[in-house]
Amino acid sequence: MNTKTIFTICLLLLVTMALQAQDRGDRNNRTSSSTTKNYNQSYPEKEGMIRVKYITKWGFTDVSGKEVIPTIYDYAEDFSEGLAKVKKGNHFGFIDKNGNEVIPFKYEMVQSFSEGLASVKIDGFYGFIDKSGKQVIPAEFFDAHPFSEGLALVRFKGKWGYIDKNGKTIIPPLFDEARSFSEGLANVRRSVLVTKPEFIDKTGKTVIETNYLDAKPFSEGLAGVQSYETRKWGFMDKQGKEVISLQYDDIGSFNEGLVAVGKKASFSTQWGFIDKTGKEIIPVQFQGFVAPVFINGKAKVTKDGREFYIDKTGKEVQ
Image (cartoon, rainbow, N blue to C red; front, top):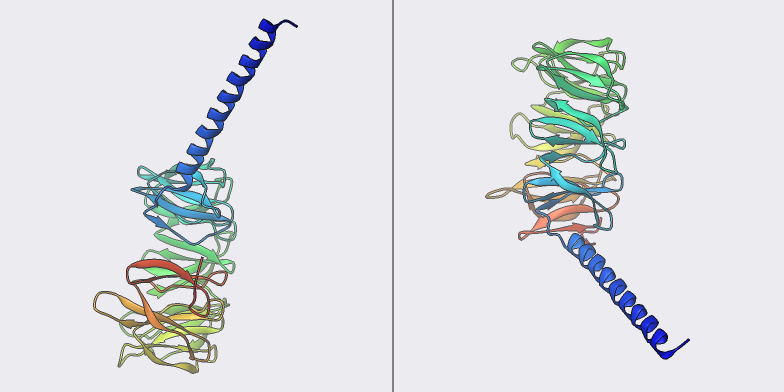
């Protein structure tokens, strides 16, 4: 091999190495820009995905912060049972975790999937579809909530009742107000004008009568209840016994053994956490209009204008 040939080969090798280096740099720059994107909002991880908002559009990152579904949607909710409710223009549909649009954008409104079905609004009425997009319960209700413990809360004209997954009415429409079943019970009000909240079982039988102004669903064995006289909140058990005194301006629901309790402040609510005995675990100090909640040992809170996560001792964590 002569000198000229050796020189030509070396030159080609140098050019090839330079091009490879440039390509790696371009990829690194693209990766860096995607991971440093500053989102307006981000939400706790659900099913391995984090819902984010960039300017006015919504998308998803994975738990490492890598954007895996672009911020192209006008609205999005967290993944539920492998699918996420998203909006394009004036219509809703569903995507999977690869960003595939698996149920078309043709609905006026949808709810996230729960127990294999999702409520959808068509021509002003609600029915239910399965994950293939098949209509399994006709759109004939004035409103509908997701299935919970085998039953869905639906509105027949002016009253609420409950149906099963075949669309059969299980509890007739007898209630002016009602909530979905939780831990085998649902809190309802037969008339907003003359009756107090009560809890029914899945046969429609009243099992707890209350003397409260309002009540929330049971969570981890306790339900929030509100005083007529003071408008303060506390908790009762499934025997209807008041177990945490009515002393709070607002409350969340128990999750992982703790619940957020609030005191009204000038422009929002100040939140802390108590356990099931009513003992203060984390003092009232966080700001916000919505009760924070512990999920997988962490709660997202706001203090002095800064959002961060805390553990169950109140210590800031990543």
